[in-house]
Length: 297
Image 1 (cartoon, rainbow, N blue to C red):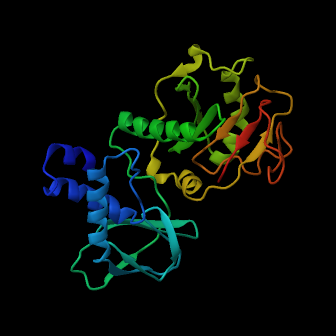
Image 2 (cartoon, helix red, strand yellow):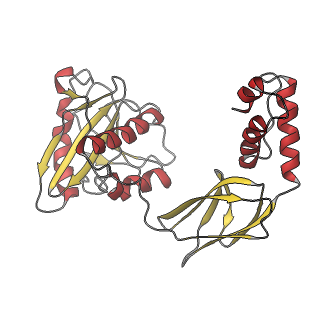
C-alpha cells in the first residue's frame, strides 16, 4: 500500500508514510527487500520506522482471573502479566491458556504514558453465526475449505456438527473443491456415539478409486452455528499431532481423510470397532492407503 501511494503522490504526503507506519508498528525488525522495492520506497520506509522507534511506549498486558501466553502481532511474547514496549499504531493482542482465549486490537498513541490492556479469556469461538441458513452455510463452507487448503496431503475434510437433535456429517473434497451430500441423522443419545457409528457410512460416498463422484456432491455446506463449535476452535488454536485411524480392510483407493469435526467426536469411541487407533508420535508418516486421520482435538 505504501509503495502504491508513493507512486501516486509526493514523498512528503502522508499516505505512504501512514501505510509504512502501520507495517512498521506490527514488525519493527522488518526490512524491505531492495531487490523488490526501489531506493525511494526503502528509504522512506526506514525513515518512517526509525522515527517511530524513538516513540515506543510501555504496555502492560494482564488476564482477568487467569493467566496465559501472550501473543502480540503474531509473535509469542511471554506470560501474563507482561510488560512490553510497542511502537505507536494498531496492535493485535491474544492471550491463550487452559483452552481459553481472548483477543483485542489496541491502539498505542505516541502520547500514551502506560497503556494497561486487560483481557478476559473465555472458551474460544469462531465468531457469531449468520442470521440466515444460507449465510451459516457460507460460513461453515469457508472454514472447512480453509482447513483443506492448509492441510497438506489431505484429500477430504470431515465436516461434523449438530443442530438441535440432528447430527450433520459431510465430506469436503479438496481436489474438486466440493462437498459430499450431507448425512442428516437424528440422535437421542450423544452426537459423538452416533457419529462414530455413522462415519463408515459416510465414507461410502467415495468410490473405489478414492474419488467423490459428482452424483454424490453438492456445492453447499451444512448450515451450522460456528459460534458454538468450541472443538473446532480449539483445534485451530491449539494444534496437536493427529492420530490416524487405520482402515481395517475397507480402504478407498489410497486417499486420506482429515477429520476436522465440530463436536468432539471420534476420540476413543472407535477402539475395537471397524477401525483401530494408533498414535503417529515418532512413527513414520502414514502412507496413503485408505487411512482416516482423526484430529486434532
